[in-house]
Image (tube, rainbow over all chains, first blue to last red; front, side):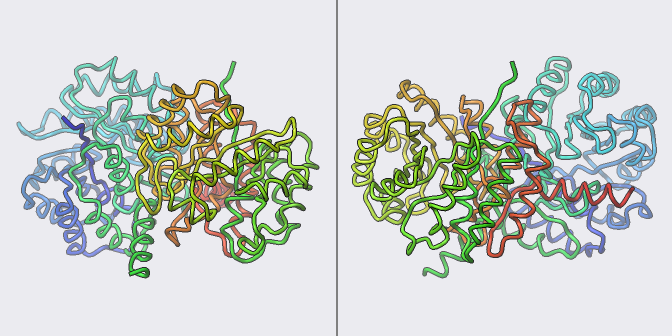
Length: 306
Length: 306
């Protein structure tokens, strides 16, 4: 039987939130529909956060409603606190993704709480979670922090001890928030996490491509046994700590790599690249990835020769 | 003992040859000197080819002379035929790199010969090689051909049978000419090559980043046991078969990755990025890589905060 991976499209959340000019809700929904049509079956569709803090995601409830209208789309929504989780649940969210950073400084910067305070929020969320709601834990700065540098593996595992105890059923995404992790560290931390938390049903890897290692680190995670990978269409996202640099690894680059390795993604690369071309034109977006340009250049050349 | 790799800087050949406007010889020499100062100890310095076919490399003898003046720099020069190899030897080349493609169509396009004719050229070169001259074989389209698509491993190994018999002492670089190889294929072909040719003293991998897999494929080759890697400063090179797309993997991206993995390269990343910034401004150059932009953005931000 062929091997397969699940690609989680995080562009509608991680990508859009870094774009300053408001993207019309209808445009967001249209992109979501095209991603679905290209074969994506799991999306981080939006985030329930303060609309004052992140006006771009003020339409979270509308976006979630549209996502829930797409059959068999697993639409996870990011929440930073119990209050926003309740908002998401009220909006009928079926899949909650909670974010907490391992490093104190990044967690304060991101959600204005210490990691311990976020652990308490997580416990509150889990206690109130309706039966059947899926749960994911996005562990930011699991490898490296923009403020504190390389994160000791022991610190990440110690925080996971607390978080896994609260919700052993949650999938856990280890996130390379800065893009500065290298493959050896990815390999090592996943191996230790698998050994320490055999009860965790699933692990994911969230790569950034800021330093050109988005695919290399994803490959390392794949070899470590990870089968769920985050990526953003057109590499949309940028890096808030290094303006001008790219952020998320591009979905089309990961799909290209896995396709070439005969690992099934269920995604049509040509349809995906068409969406990526549209996303690449969004005003104010910082984009990345290589496959989009390479296939466009190939197509131009073929047309010129024809 | 720490592990180490040797990075072969191919920008002065593979990079410069794709730049249309002539780069002044003094500029080329200055870049060579800066690469050396950053710690690079092996460079594909130029190519002895027809100056009519490649006017950019018409100054090959001058460049080689400058490279030979840098102490302990291993300066390999690329040659496509026995005639040009003789020119290189006359110019005191100490290290000859011969190029042949596995695929018929690419070899004809590149050097106007069938692979069999190139094998005969190689035999002539090897027979005439002065004692002590180092020899490298650059095997183009070892994985994939712009005209013929994926290359069967059996075809690559069969051509290597002939080439290794001619010169078992040569280092062999398997080249991903199109950037379309995926890591599983890199792993597989190197494993088969190692098993079939135990007499070959050294293997190298030449990655392109056109599809975002330059670092991932290099990582696969590293895990397969390869310890010599080609790369071009600033990712200079482009892709002649997909104008507008990037080509060679960037030297600074590979150095960044190996540094992070505690694999010694002997190269100062900051000095290297300074050269990359200069190379990135060459008129007519198609550049790539991520580390250059990421470190520049980081530096801008730190200055702004200071």
